[in-house]
Image 1 (spheres, rainbow, N blue to C red):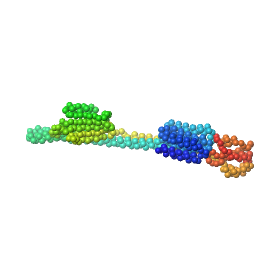
Image 2: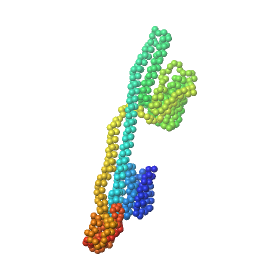
Image 3: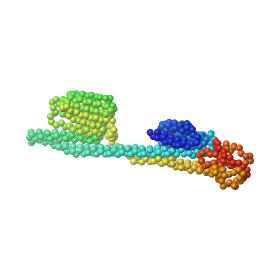
Image 4: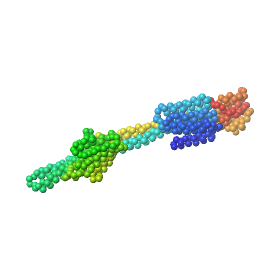
Length: 517
């Protein structure tokens, strides 16, 4: 869409120039350029240099024109060089392209023997169309790189900030675990010890000893629960910390379970991927905890395990039937393992569901094969300092933008200060040698120069073409040439006044032919 809009704008400019051109060719001045731009504009996305060469070729058509060097395709040349600046890196290739185009234009003027107007156009307008838009394009490219680099840096800083917050959370959970283990765990251990000692006291009745045994068992369960909770807190802070690489596989775990008399069946579905070590261990823990719960709460039940891999995710399902003989009598320590599993699976970016199913029980966990959340499996270390690196990177980007800004605006200004004086002097020469047609008509052969000196311009035209200079003239005369109008970029008729001494002996109107400097 953008390419079509650009083509439409340049086509409109070309049609406008075609409308005001003298004796234009429909094929060479309109149809051919439009076809060239229709190919060059989309092609410049992959070959920007080719687009510049194509547009410069259209401008060369103007240099080959004997009536006027200027055409509207200079705007297309500026557009192509701007696109080359935004789409290519600064280097030798773009500079070589611009230099080659300018050399082609100057060589064409020399080969065709063009006059000063053509040379003025080739050394001012075309270099500006080649250089300035390219410099603006590379400045725009650097500015976009600065903005995108700033957003990437901000994203990196946000990630580092989240990493710092996660590290602080893990340290706090570890501190809480240590406090629970050192204070509450110690107190509960003392209570269990005292209860065991009182249970052996000879002064207690049988009922008191029974009550004391239940108290000791309850305290032991509380200690086990506390130990499990502390393990979850210390295990990477969220149940995803570094694990022992020697943990057995799920198949080995089930072999041991079958050897113990548990009826267990395993079904795997899908191609087994390479899982993250944390995910692999979580799968093992889900199966292990589910088997433990089945043996505690439904002894003798059949256990069915399904592990499926699909779409970058792993699903673990453990289902046990109802217990044939009912649950084991009494309280069984360690019955809160599902809480730790919930936290472990959630930390990995997964979901765990557990609940009754057809007089049995089912545990289902769905986890990604690879972790994408904050990496808890990384070594516990301080995050890298981002300030110095970000400052350096931002400073480098800003320096590049400033340099390209200087190249895009200061360099053309310096070029203009060098070229404009010469161009201004040439324009002054062309403008001050114009003899208006009314003044030419008022001058008559036989008059003295002093009689019409006030009608003559400040100076005669210093660059008449070879054709004009070779036109027949009265012998023994000295001729001066004047332009018939002040159009600087157009070919005009020349007025020739021939003098014998100070007396005008001939006046002629000569069409200006091919020019030479």
